[in-house]
Image (cartoon, rainbow, N blue to C red; front, side, top):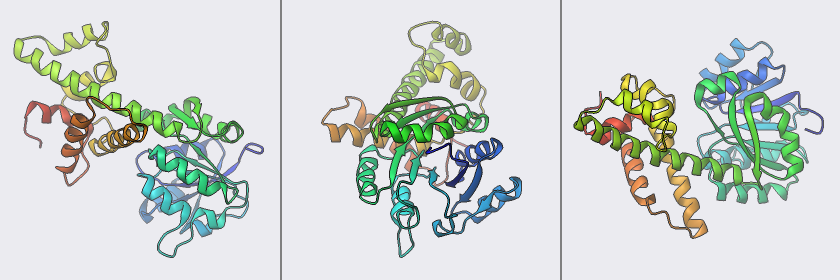
Length: 301
């Protein structure tokens, strides 16, 4: 930061945002939090001494120049940053030269559009989505992919290092969100291929635990075989902490990105229909590893 920021706003206390904000607080950062759920905000300030709850962005302390966002999607980000329904946005309350760090899984094309709008207000935007799940969020060991101008990324780095085990500047603004979406597209494709292979193996009589061990010493190793198969599928727990709905959203972002670049994805439409259709079939959030049961045609309880 201009110097290292010691006071930040943190907006979005969901499954990932809550532990990320907690890590900052534990590191001595003064945190002012805002979430649409009053219960989450209240719980946070009760559990974290001297943390301050905001009722709206207008309540941000005047000396705060850095705000971190961990929101569901670009629509929510735009609403918080630009304002909506007569409510002020961050553009209306932050001082010139302020920095917004969007750690949400946002659409990279919309991120670039937002950055241009903020530039006219002399407010900077860095995108810094994360990978690693709730456990790594709580331990401050997330993988952080950062997009933005080098000077602004440098401003954000000390905060990001508190939340991330690895922090990598991957390019200009929007590149972090692009890489995150493409990473999860790869993860979604590899999950389906691994699930299908395991189901074939099961019918043929292979030991799935042994097969997984061999795959992890072979060219078929991927994130699904590495830890999801034994920990969440064969165990029957199906509780990785990352929802099917979020995976479907990220696949959709990757498909939108591909269309915007003119690069066709041979498996894209199939993945979009598979993950998107599955997400739409559940009224409540469900873990993405349940996709294994769906591919197998097994009952979901």
